[in-house]
Length: 224
Image 1 (cartoon, one colour):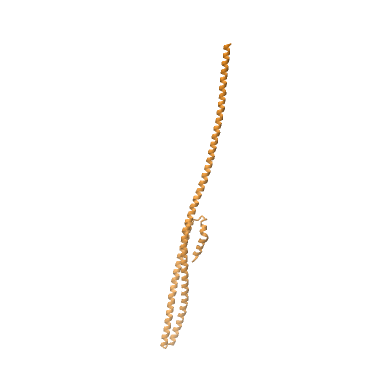
Image 2 (cartoon, rainbow, N blue to C red):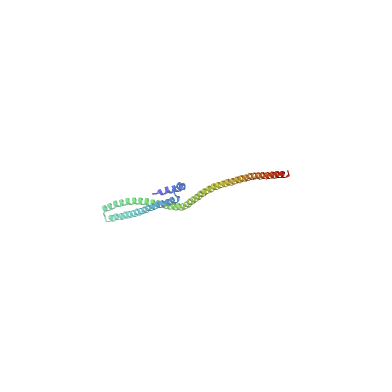
């Protein structure tokens, strides 16, 4: 009947903490635990109601037995007053039986009364722990949702950060490479241009020299 308390201790001690580390959804599991508690409380309430009914029944039978015993004593007295000692004796024998029955019923009633009180205390304790678990459930569900949201954001930020950083590093390296290639090509172009200019200058100089030599030769012929 009271497996509820074992479950409560399990939830409070280890199971709630374990839920946060398992693949199980803490919110759903916590709701299920509350449902299980409420079922246990309903079972106990039914048992308590039956016990109270049994207590009342025993009390009524005890009172009837006490009343019957008192009636037999009055009847025995009436038989003696009528000078019927034999009848009085039989009535007293029955009265003693009824007294023994009343004594047994009294003991049963007192035990039932004690058990009813114990069950009522247990039920109140269960309901108090149920209320405590409900409040703790709301807090744990909120913490669980916050933890999941934080983990999700951290994973997303970590993934985006690594990807972006890696991408930027690749692009930076590529830009540096492109810049180096551009500088190299510009230097090569500058070298090639200087060489071509020098060669062109040599060709121009040679042409002028030939023309100058030709004019000198022409002048010498003319003066001769």
